Amino acid sequence: MATSELLGPVFPTVDSVACNTGPGYAVNAADLVKFAAIGVAILMLARVARGRLTRWGKTVAAIAAVASIVTGVANGVEHCAHLEAVGLVYVLGLGVGILATAGFGVLLARTGALPGWIGWVVTAGALAFLFRANEGGRAIDAIAWTVVGVGLLVGALRVAHRNQLG
Picture: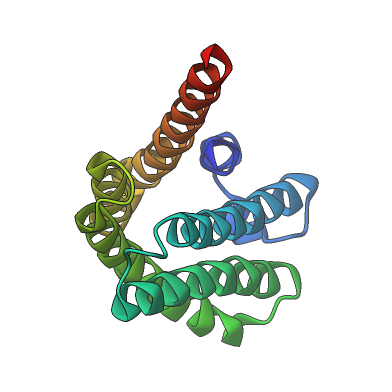
């Protein structure tokens, strides 16, 4: 996710050149991977919390995941296939995805299936993206997802270590 955010400032005119240059292709590919990774991460978090998520929580998670993946695909199609009409799909997917991700974070935090901070960090990242995307909000969202991933990895390693000690 961070790669996508780092490439933007390095190649600031990528949106205007779309996929007419190597950097344009790189930024659009990184965006696709970023949005797909967010969608998969949401599905994995929902899977971990599935026993405690309500039907509404599972629905919101599915909407957030699908919207995120659609956003990544639509962005690449719009820029690389030069189909400007797909921009509407991108904008709708992005809006629905951000709002659903923020909502999912709240619902996840309230389940108790995972430490509550995970859901709140997901929500904070989504809201930062929503309200301050061009003023560092996208980077904050990328950092939020990185923190969640590292936190889950550290937790899993601690559990594995405790199990080894027996």
